[in-house]
Amino acid sequence: MLYAETAPYRLHALGVPGGHVLHVEESGHPQGIPVVVLHGGPGSGSSPLLRRFFDPARYRIVSPDQRGAGQSRPRGSTVDNTTAHLVADLETLRETLGIERWLVVGGSWGATLALAYAMAHPGAVTGLLLRATFLAREEDIGGFFQPADVGLADAWARFAAIAPADRRHAMLPFLAQGLHADADTARHMALAWWRWESTLATGAVAQREPSGAALDAQVDRYRVQSHYLLHRCWLDEPPLLDRCDRLPAVPTLLLHGSEDRICRPEGALALHQRLPHSRLRLIEGAGHDPTHPAMVRAMVEALDGWPS
Image (cartoon, rainbow, N blue to C red):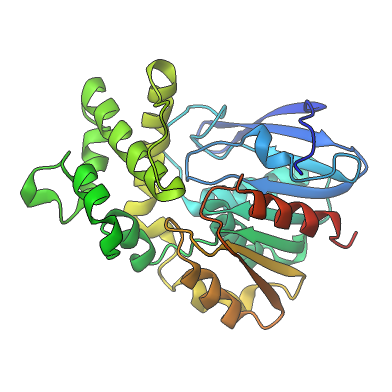
């Protein structure tokens, strides 16, 4: 049910403070409904997949790579790279493109950034579609690296074996340190993180593991991601949930896989309880993978019917 992949009709290299240059792609219809699509991670970069949920005849799709991510430069940089910087970058991008207001769509970390942006610039947002909401709470981050689910015990033991026994209680700082060590150590850390993440996302490690340039890209991705997670994404004072009164009362849809083990459904439930105007759909059988057929169907149906 995904729309066919279409090439961007315009590319941008947007310079922002701190020496970063953001790679931005516009696709779809130049006079369509403006939508900004926020990728996950942090540090993952955008993907052609993310714009295939949108009818290209109906939407003007803006896909930025965030600081340090994707084709933005310098890739993997954590200098002047915080949530506040990303929020400011989105507003700079909106003004540069001459867009008055836009729909904000994000998945996983992209949903977090969508919330932070809408809180800072409520007048610029026509709606929010959030897939796999991540709230950057201590339990959200700790639950990824130190899960309480006994069903994951064997998989976690394989993941944690990368660390000495006396450091397995704090995997995130151990991995973050290794990602900034020599190249071989950094690749070793990135591959272990990637295997664990793919296990949580799909229930099994993918057979084709990244290597060469693809693995180096994962090193950069996880350097950015660990930088954010070590600081709880700068969203804990006050916690994101306690800022919900700053969100605009615009159409807000939360889609969340019932089997998501990376961003647990409890986060979406907690957010829904704080937003009386929101709608929550738990997608039965779906995990964190945005390509799960039930999640694809839910995303496409929601966007096809989104008010213009």
